[in-house]
Image 1 (cartoon, one colour):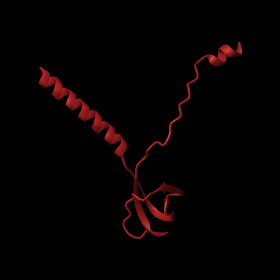
Image 2 (tube, rainbow, N blue to C red):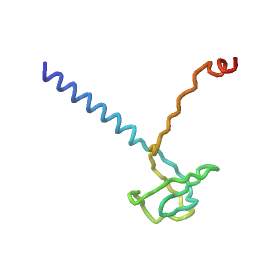
Image 3 (cartoon, one colour):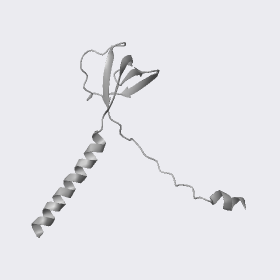
Image 4 (cartoon, rainbow, N blue to C red):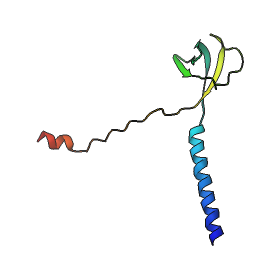
Length: 98
């Protein structure tokens, strides 16, 4: 019985870790002509919109990217801060108005 619980605990931990990694590792892409490129960002035109995406020293760049080149940028989304505000209670306005 002890071995069964141990295997179940290991399996549950592995699944939890895999679920967390999957959410953090989800990648997106944008393809289009380069509008601007600096040491810290690249701006790509997608349709009528310009998408400015930050890049750093660890960003893998293949080739010499210049304005006007067509590129495909792979990126992830990571929150840098989260601010929570309490939800308003239903009926609070009606009670205050009376």
